[in-house]
Length: 230
Image (cartoon, rainbow, N blue to C red; front, side, top):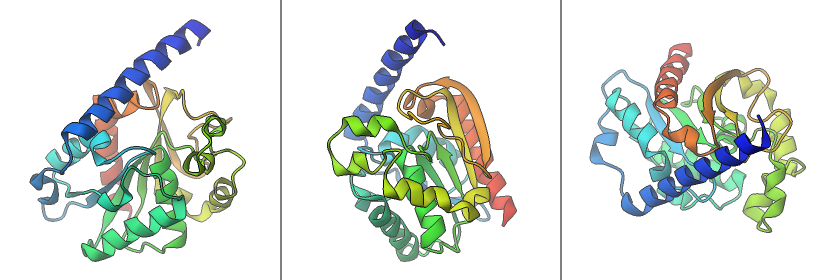
């Protein structure tokens, strides 16, 4: 990509980011139909990226719901500014409290790190796997630009990023969907995760990837593929 193409991709992606934040203001409470899954269909738990709520991923939640999957959100995460380990415990608590017998984690950005931490450390026997979208599995050097702990934890040199990188035993339970150009994941391998199923989609942008019908279909397919592995 040329520098001009990258700049255009950044601009377009930030328009989609604003669209996501607007959705968060409009949609505070998940639709009641989210919980009404078809019997036999594996549930999905939405885990957004940093500063995000479930509504940032509403289009994906809607598509999963229409496909018959019960969809759960995690209100206790707030805007996802807690540390990764604490966030993983919150997600685990929701699964236990709601008595969800089986659920695939569907995550965006930092949510993928929370999901991997849960798979690796919380046991999560009722979670067969995770679909991660634009997850910074190797961290992102961009995190150094924001002087807040929640962001610095995503740095390529942070302790939790190195710790999660060593947890390779759960990688085969993860499907990583990544845009062909990610303006926020500044790392050599991007969202590529060794041992996982890695899918690159023809979308440019860390946030735009959530608003692509191609990605919505890929997520539904990935959730159902993981459910069949059990």
